[in-house]
Length: 301
Ligand SMILES: Nc1ncnc2c1ncn2[C@@H]1O[C@H](COP(=O)(O)OP(=O)(O)OP(=O)(O)O)[C@@H](O)[C@H]1O
Image 1 (cartoon, protein in one colour):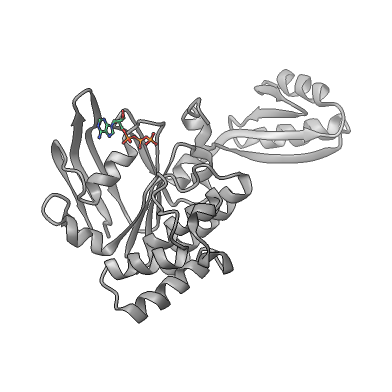
Image 2 (cartoon, rainbow, N blue to C red):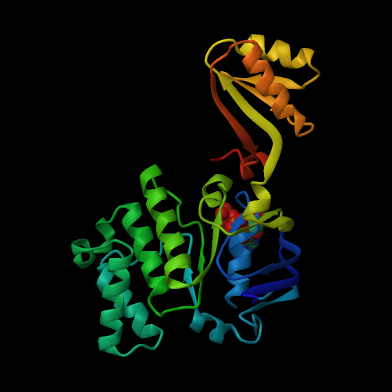
């Protein structure tokens, strides 16, 4: 099943090409859209919502055309914008009920639904206070709640962890994972931090300068490498020398050795070398590639 698809999608502004012939498909689950600041993430989301017309190419969300069916798309898609957009004098409850009413829910249903989603995102007594006094974390939760209040099939979350401290980030990421896993709502979430999406996404799309760099299932980003990490209690250098003598390729990393697995026999060579030298083995671990290793982290993290 396809949640959204773009075909040669482009968007130019007078001085910059924000999206450059982007062709990408997103399926159900949690999909991360990663790129440095200015890569074109927000522009893509606005086009997908039918809020900004493409300059070339096209896109569909849940089978609907973004140019012709924007209003229908917004009825079934929730949107959490990147920037602060909350009226400071309203409480979270007033605002979320208002957003529910705007999407067509009757008064009583809107109140009930708003209470449910605010509880779900972790806002309790404070939901009756004016939002002007909220912390960044609380504001992000309200923005998430209003994106969910009309029971969408898909949500677009634009940089939901922006401005949060490490604990706030962890909590927001856990919430996003739950939206995908427990509620069956498909999620497109943007971030300029590759590492944090590794933990919650099924699929990651990386864009740079409006172009597609890579689109892969998370498993392909973090596939097993040809290296094992070996740690011994004492005698790291002795073991490195012996393995090299036996024709293996070894480098050191901190207290550990990185051993290149050139054939299954490499494990036998390692076992015998550790035994011969009478060393105490602490760990042998299959190396895994992390998405941060695949793409360089942007400088402004
Ligand atoms: N309305 C606009 N007018 C002119 N240029 C724009 C407009 N909107 C976006 N841009 C430019 O298009 C490029 C892509 O911007 P976009 O906001 O989509 O990037 P982004 O990946 O979401 O980055 P950020 O996280 O910083 O918002 C940037 O160079 C930006 O300056």
